Length: 238
Image 1 (cartoon, helix red, strand yellow):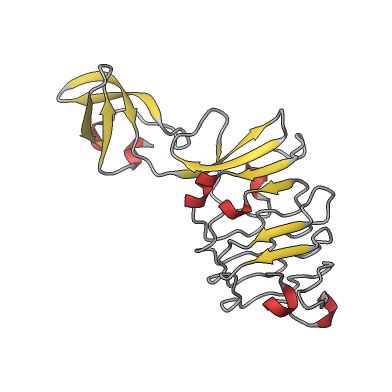
Image 2 (cartoon, rainbow, N blue to C red):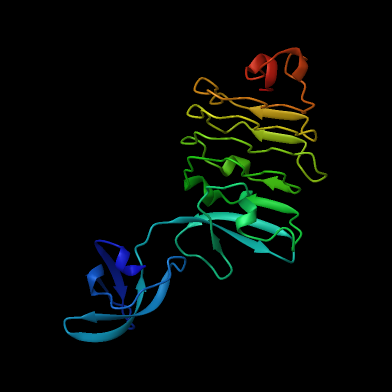
């Protein structure tokens, strides 16, 4: 809401002129999920005027579901279009797409991460793609440099539309401490590509990370060859 903000904002008047005003001058509020240019009532120097105001509010991650194509697209910005749903990035036993659309009522065929999503820096990706049955595009548009938790991220990736190849070569996992059940049950996944910033040095929990998967490592090893598949030689394909 406007009255939750501090500092100033830029008011754009009907004639196109602008003025920087203290937030305290606002006499009406906006819904927290409504961002961008809005009509609100302001009181300035004792006079009330209706203005169009560009609210200086923080940018947020959000998703849009296109029912026609069955596509959910995620963006990061401060001008949410009609139909957009803000997502925090924190998923509690529900995949990220589940906050945008009811998967029991609508069929999701594809999830896309727009380039703008790179500016979003989540700290957790737990459950993000949990049990997904859709194609995924734009995994390289996810900034993982501050992520510490990847618990259950791709768990139960065995359904028909789940991508058989995951290109995670742009991901930075140097801060991740939890990779438990990350690829649990991913029987559809055949290859995972990772890059130079993929690291498990901070990982303290990786229980069942590859359980019930059919991955073959870069040296021909399988999940049953070793107890932990977290090194480039034994678990990953560079």
